[in-house]
Length: 239
Ligand SMILES: Nc1nc2c(c(=O)[nH]1)N[C@H]1C(S)=C(S)[C@@H](COP(=O)(O)O)O[C@H]1N2
Ligand SMILES: [Mo]
Image 1 (cartoon, rainbow, N blue to C red):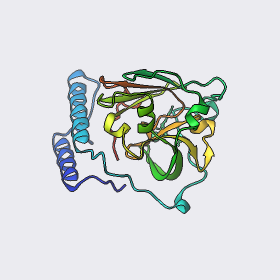
Image 2: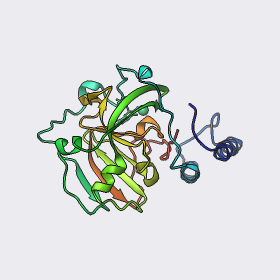
Image 3: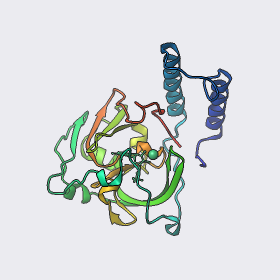
Image 4: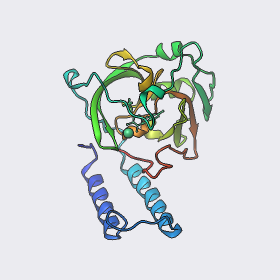
C-alpha cells in the first residue's frame, strides 16, 4: 500500500530492510527458540520501532477515498469467531480512564456518543494479507484525550478490551487527526462484532493496532504491551 512517508524515510527503511536480510535475520534462515537468537531479534525489533517512530510524520495523512469506494459488508476479524464477540450493552457499559489523566470519571455510551464527530473513508490493512476501504465516524481520540485532561507529553496511550485484547499507541499517533474513537461503520452504530460501543480507528497503522470493544483507556510513560506484539509482531506497525 502507498504510504505517505517522506522520501528520506523510505530510504532509511529500505536500508534497514537491506541490512537485516544481509545479516540473514529475515527469510530463509532457520530460526530456533534458542535464547541468543530471540534476544537479537527482540533488539532488532525494538530498534526497528525506534526507527519507525523517528520517521513518523505526525502531520502526514493516510489516503482518504470516495464514499462509493467504501465497502458496506466489512470483513470481521479477531482470533475467535464472530459469534463469540463480546455483546456489550449501553446500560452496563462504562469506559474507564486510568494513568496520567486528571479526570478519571467513567464514561457512558450516551456521553461518548455526544462528543463532536467526524467521518473518514480509509483503508484498513490486516497483517494477514487483506485490506478493505471502510467509512468510520466518531470523535478524534485527541478530542477525548483533551476532555480527560490527559498528559499529552506522556509517551503512550494504552487500551484494554472486553475480549481480553490489549493494544497501545505512541502519543503522536494517538493525537493524529485521523485517529478516531469510531462509533459508526458505514453510517450504522458499530455492530457488536465490529467493536461496539467503539473501536479505535488508526488509518496510519496495521489493523491489529485498531482495538475493538475498548473498556479502558490509559496514559503512560511505560510502553504498554500489545496482544499481537506479544506474539511476535512489531509494536510500531505503521503503514
Ligand atoms: N478487541 C479486539 N480488537 C481487535 C482484534 C481482536 O481480536 N480483538 N483484532 C484486530 C485485527 S487483527 C483486525 S484486522 C481488526 C479487525 O476489525 P474488523 O472486525 O472491524 O474488521 O480488529 C483488530 N482489533
Ligand atoms: Mo488484522
